[in-house]
Length: 355
Picture 1 (cartoon, rainbow, N blue to C red):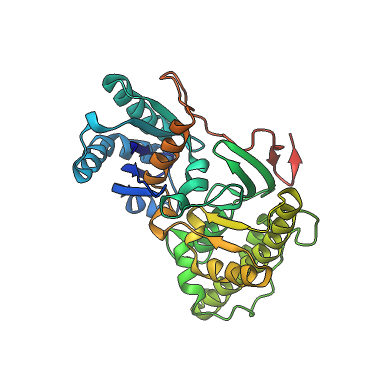
Picture 2: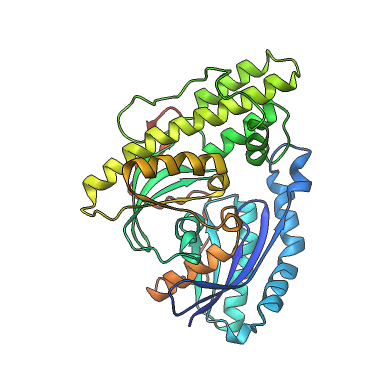
């Protein structure tokens, strides 16, 4: 059984975990420590990279020590070290990555530089034995995309956001409506108190072919409507509900197209849709996609809620999977702010511009 120490500092969570693969092919989570920085960034309404990096530096050694102590596994018993190397904020990534490389070098352990997105992509495997290939909807603060996961390190992008990530749209909506930080849970909470049909909001590129996504126009519409409601709580809740409902309609239609595209590329009647990333914790989105899965006859798999946001358990798990395929890294590996899972996919910037 393989045991890995995982380290994650790509944004504003300092995290470390010890994971052991069991004989069922899933994970025994021996420890999973996450130190959140929400309180530090709340007054700014978003993550301040320099503050986040400083907090990582202050906490990283303690968090790793706590993870090892809770796991009751010594460093000598660890088979390898995995640390997030990208994508993310460079000043934050380098803290965890350098610590992971240092531990690996001094303990003479194998080192794996993990793509944060691959951590999310494989995260349901912590508790579920999932067969490749499967369709992945990755929705987070920095990414929104549909990918075919053919195997470890083998990804094909079917569609992506051409502007903003879904998590960013949630955060900006919460900020515009003064609903609190972090934005995703706040919008979801207050949306339950509103009328989802009160505001008619746009569904950008919904009728365009393919499964690319766009949220910038929706965000702009929320800004426009928010200026008219003058701190009226009922209207705020109605706008939050209308935003959540519009997101659900967009994801329903685009996921349906992605499933059809997946079927055309993969000759299999056994279809699994994995929904991962921080926004996958949104219960309304889960219920919405459950309706689609019932309609189209596929299975939807989610990570446990505690593994949706940034965490080191998924990094250690991805490290184990890469270790088994001998996908190891040298100690001179560097952090990457941008690191797509499908290196061959066109880079989308702005209004769908391909560079």
